[in-house]
Image (tube, rainbow, N blue to C red; front, top):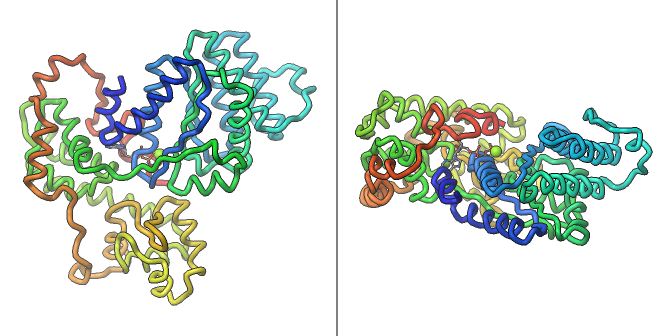
Length: 441
Ligand SMILES: Nc1ncnc2c1ncn2[C@@H]1O[C@H](COP(=O)(O)OP(=O)(O)OP(=O)(O)O)[C@@H](O)[C@H]1O
Ligand SMILES: [Mg+2]
């Protein structure tokens, strides 16, 4: 099962393995997973895809799952809504128990718009801390999951950096209390968020040691090749080494761009049939469409930046794509390093830049700096610094990686595999399309 998920999500086998071990522990020993793992990384690196894969792994093992995306409204309100939705899968008594726990939680956080089947008892309950109420809700949901023949409860929180401090505090308290009171509860929680999630959580939560962090990065060459050629290979279509090398020069191992160039090449080749090969010519024909989408992706990011942020982005882009020194940015803006700290912080909050070692910053999406220089600042191509060397640009290496990825021949291996349900567009993630909302935020 995990092997199947790893095929769908190249380069993330280590993460999937780590999560499966935790799920296996919770399932086998019927114990609480006492720490909350948070996968952190920049926009478009594949956090949501990974969290959804964790969710599928949990469901495959027989867990009941709740997927929460933090952000639009107070975190505990979203939690209440998702657990209320969960309870609708169950019969009356289970549903009533969850509704009561949700009602207590909503009393703990003040008036909210969640409608539940609360009895008069709920109103009479003395107000307790939201952390305690959240603990009670998770306990109730886990017990009902067990009663309904599930092995336990797995909760997923995406965009955790957008959760408000009260919500994060309640989560930290709940997990801390559960570790003491509910160690025999088969429950687990996994989260994902932007790179600065740790700062956000640590400043909100006293029990920060309940959380642990794993950093997601761009794909390595092998994973990028697998992500590029895997979907075509499963349909009996090969990539020539030149085509793969050219595509990866566009994508720079950034997962979203790998999907994008793969998709555009597939279209440029006229939706090939089994036995066909994608060539460098097809990639060339896909370049314009790729660049158009890439530019609108960058334009959306630029448009959401404030005046101070755009100035900082422009100064940074003038200095390079990666590892730009903060003091050089400040100098370019004619100010002191401390003066750019607000813009730096908000650009990190938006996932556009990230820390790159002490005192240095990098753009998170490859090509953004070049876009700013060319499209915004109008710098001539000749004046630009030399292009970054393409990852996996070496033809020999690509050929070797391709040979490893594309063998054995797809039709033979397909015959041995059960038929897979495939989404209509081959490079499309199960959860959402290439132009999905998350990337444009
Ligand atoms: N391991 C992977 N290999 C190839 N493509 C991937 C991988 N993970 C994710 N993708 C693709 O990259 C794109 C972005 O993925 P996803 O939405 O999961 O990123 P994200 O980190 O959640 O982005 P955001 O921060 O904007 O929410 C999607 O098109 C997805 O299919
Ligand atoms: Mg996401």
